[in-house]
Image (cartoon, rainbow, N blue to C red; front, side):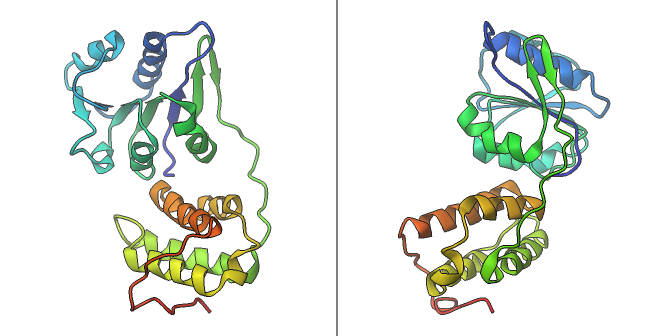
Length: 230
């Protein structure tokens, strides 16, 4: 993820949704940067602190529908109650600061691990972990090189991973099961994170691998049906 100040406001003991939202608003307003954008699932919602923020001059409010993360560049962003898909939309934006209001831990657990944000709890602020990430063991069968190639190709497109690169991965997983059998989904996710891939692309690759390990076959077009990475 781009080096941006990021915080997630989490629900704690003896807490309330309103207090959780207020913590995110206070943290965001304390950050330097450009105008504020507020993103909520729908135009209508219940939160007095967020409503007060939206009422301020030059604060813009958007709902999920029809809005993309690219509009967040150069702004301070309050992102309320996102699911995993919408968390991925803020992965590589060049915002000045981002405050996320968590709805459920199942949506944010991997994102928090990947992004390492400030965590806001009642009366407590947990700073990002400073320990260096452990060095990854090389993946067997040339998988490291495959993921590096895919990451390089995805980085060349504004929308990330293209269908043809995804088809190449699917074909290789079916044509070379020996290559992928000893590799875990968690190892692939960790490698993709180190390579700086977008959240959507990491999820796509790991989902494809998990489905293959579950015995699923893929409908790959004739162009790449017999493809194998060297």
